[in-house]
Image (cartoon, rainbow, N blue to C red):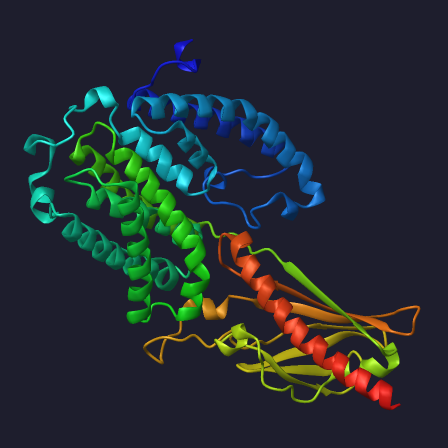
Length: 461
């Protein structure tokens, strides 16, 4: 059948219908498979990425189920790739853009764009657009000059970023894929659509406008006390990369024979899609993954001498690490009330104290504890002292921890500190990079202090 050929092009209506039919067929098959494995499979399982986001987080008992889904998905991936290549050929866009179908959230935006953008044969060929090819309203609102249209693109997207961040973080209490992936991609894409509405623009200038939109959006979030400096700086690498990817897609659309008004249809689509996706994430929220961070040091002392510094330690000197100087909470001292499993340990940080009931007291080998109360993970900085973004309540939530002391043959000890934590920020893998790094630095601050104290006492003894 021609519809299953790699050759030629495919119209937007045929592409949309084919995609919806294939989705319906696959969903029906997956529901049957899920029922066979005693599970429930819902439509948004395809659209809202699961917690963890990687194979490493799949439990061993889940492997047969997900492997079956993967095998079933292969022919659908093949057909979908083939149809997408033909659709990209039809709109004179780079066929490498097929890769966008494998990026969560962006793949939905990409599918919708391919469904509404006209085939090249359907649009007038002149590069300079005629008045008939435009919208009279947009023609008046969007300036023709490069500088003025760039300023409008940057300002509009800054306002959009503030409003959408308020919606996702404040109203929906959701730091999800829509906020950290969909929003920056759309900022880059929509800024180029505005910037290139009247004239073709160079790739360099499109990238410049997209980067400016992200930078000014960050400044606006800071100025309106929506977010603090630390969160903005942490999100900046991911946001800039995705905004440039969106700008590239916008650039490829604006250099094709086109109708400026038709391209702006994609712009209005994003204004509807993104709030809807954020709301969908909120309604189908995923449980967070529990991560473990382990850090170890070798100490020139035996476990018996080290144990008392593990249980409690005096006040540490001021930190020298840059992340702690910039506002990330850091450990100050540790106190213990009682002894054994009934004891309560309090690890005092710069923002408050962790309350840690002891659940394993195996002197001098293992001290394990739960975390029943924890302070804010950072002091956020902003133009206003009152900034208190919701992520302060759910970023780096420690659940439990332990210190393990392993005696070495040479009389030394390997001291291993482990923290189990989770967070409610997606993509989990990206934010885990920051979480693991911060906790590792916290571990090192404590372990190095214990090492110095124990080794000094050991030498004197």
